[in-house]
Length: 252
Image 1 (cartoon, rainbow, N blue to C red):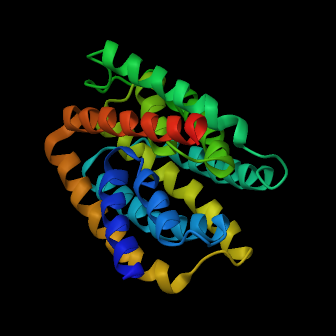
Image 2: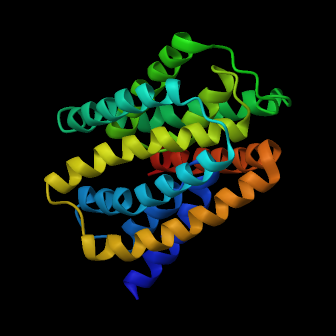
C-alpha cells in the first residue's frame, strides 16, 4: 500500500513538474506522510531518484517540438550541475531554515508580478543573443542550481519565471529550457544522495516509471495548448507553493 500511494503521488508530480515545475510540492509531502519516521535525506533521495526521469523525459519531448537555444543551455546546464553540487554540500554545513520564512514572500512577489503583467511570457522575444544569452542562462543556472541543492522548493517555477522575465522567453520555451537545467540540478543532488546511501532504489524504479508517464501527459498538453496554458498552470502552482511554504515557514 505504501508503494502504491507514493507511486500515485509520483505520477501526479511528474504531470505538474513537466509543465512548470513544482512536482516536489506533491511528492515530498507524500513521502513524509507515508514514511514519517524515515531520515529526511532518504526521502529527498527517493524524490530526486523518481523525479529526474520525468524531467529528463519532458526535456526530450520538448526538444523534439520546440527550438531550444542549445549553445546557451548546454553551458548553463554544466554550471547548474556544479551549483547544485555546491549547494548540496553547503547544506551539510549551514542550515537552510532561514529561507523557510523568506521563500513565501519571494513567491508572492513572483505571483504578483506575473498577474500584473498579463502579456508576460505570451510572446517569445529573447533579449540576448550568442555569448550574452549563454552568459545570462549560465548565471541563472548556477544561481538556481545552488538553490536547488541547498533548499529546493519551487526550483522549476523559479527557472520558468526567470527565463520569461530576464531572458524574454515565452512560457512554453521557458518551460522547455527549465526542464534541461532542472534535470542537471536533480542529477547532481541524486548523485550526492546515492553516494551517501540515501536512495531506496527498489522504490525509485517503480516511482520513476509513474513519474515519466505523468511527465509525458503533461508535456503533450503543454505543447498542444501553448504558452497560455503553461502560464495558467504556473499561476496555480506558484499559488499552491505560497500556501505550502507559508505553512512550513510560519505556522509549524
